[in-house]
Image (cartoon, rainbow, N blue to C red; front, top):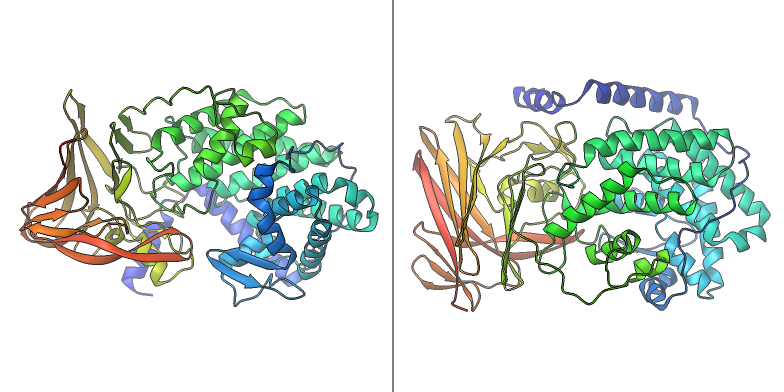
Length: 590
């Protein structure tokens, strides 16, 4: 093992908590023991189900049918599309097919296609129930031995909730099919028993929240003392995790807007299901939903999407407007009706008044500053790369930003293309893929493999000042302080609403370095040189810089498995420290 690899492992492991190490060793040992024993899937006699209180209320609403019926038709043909890849299966699904990507197989095991099938069933599609039965039977038969993707606690958690939706939504058909109902419930109950002993306390984060959600769902679904233990355990650990994972400003602590949406949806649906089962909804849970909803509203881009910071893919979560329609209806706030609120049976109403403009916000807990005017919008990411013990969705992106003018994207982050370890995962996590400065060809945070991070940058806010005419934000990070020579990157944003955005970068230290500054433009833009050091980006916007720049090509991926090339403004900085560079985005007079 090389010295570099030993150092990387040291800097990766040093952030882990003793609790994580204990649970990790315990889970690894348990898996090996199960393989030695060739443990088979538990199929206990399941206790009675509680009287079903369907979570999805209005599956025949036109909004719902339009959303799901095409997907349901594909599923009935065993045709599945995930990650911009479509695969047609024959008699059985490829639960363990190595030719399929790991994440594609995970999606098969999730059973998220239950909801489209329920919508089709209640719209009169006779084959929807039989399709679910066929796929569920196939899963049970193909996953008789514990191990592999199907028995990872994360896939178990998502599948448990989806199967419980199926048990309620197909209840009449299941009552007419008692043999399958018994087999389905036995497998479901056995999966819950297994999950209860294999919670992801070693990973924590959104994975553990999914585990706890499944325990709570199962605890509400089944009769008996064991189910009550699941419910109490799920709520106990959920309260502990929410207290840590929901930051004071309402952001999820992984600092990925995409995962914020996923976690908020989970917490909201837990609260709603507790309410529908006539259970008390804890105040801490309602408060968390309210805080996370407020944060999501505050960071939305002019196009209604979340910023593409960290591991955010726009197709991996509900559109924010759709999720907010359900949550705001539940909270009693105004919201436009969508298929989601209709499916939940929540009456979403709008009072017809314009939504108030989000003010200029400095959110120090998550490390985001949002600046918004009548025409323009900017978000700066000056937060930590990740929670100290959870680097899965970290990127080497400290001090990156996204910038919109007149509602149109100008500078955007790169997104994510895939989670599989390799060149593309490395590319989209690297500093070079973000709107910031790379020094000596190194990443500001040492991201590696699919979900690992070793040495991390520590950002710091120096100044945040607002006056009547401009806002000044000065931030810096030490991600290059360990290099020789040691370098501190300091960045100043000067925002003049509806007029200009000036960004000044300073590399501080002593010695000589080579660095690269990059501004990745949205793929819709084709910049044109109009003078030395000046680019026309749109009819309204120009960029000027005294530092020479070139237009290079970079990659953009707002959805899994789909990438396009785009223009990147690239500046090369070489010489003795300190080095400085400055660019100004200037709007035409309105």
